[in-house]
Image (tube, rainbow, N blue to C red; front, side, top):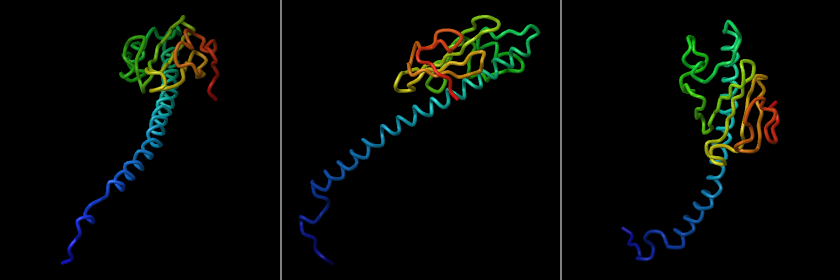
Length: 161
């Protein structure tokens, strides 16, 4: 059996410091990319949710004897058949995918649904809006960009192709 000298056992302090530094550099690069991908995923989900909402609202309107938009999410989630699933709730606001959705029924022929990040810069960076035109509007302003229908009046708003 070979005998080991005392200074050959384990790692040296310098080696451990180098490993810790490399892990720190990798974490510095990986964490912002992970957070950015979460924001991108939330923003993709909010666009899909707005399309689903728009389809549900239009289906609801076309099923009415006198065409009219719903007064809140509850009209869409509690009707039979339901136009949206129960995760939308029954009120005027709901939170999904890091965004707060607000339904704004202006009249029987005009509505808007506004989506703003629950935590600006963390869950999302942009505000979104959909109205009776079924176009989704985006604004780089994280809150207060859209206040009513139609969505085109939003601050710095543009349609998503």
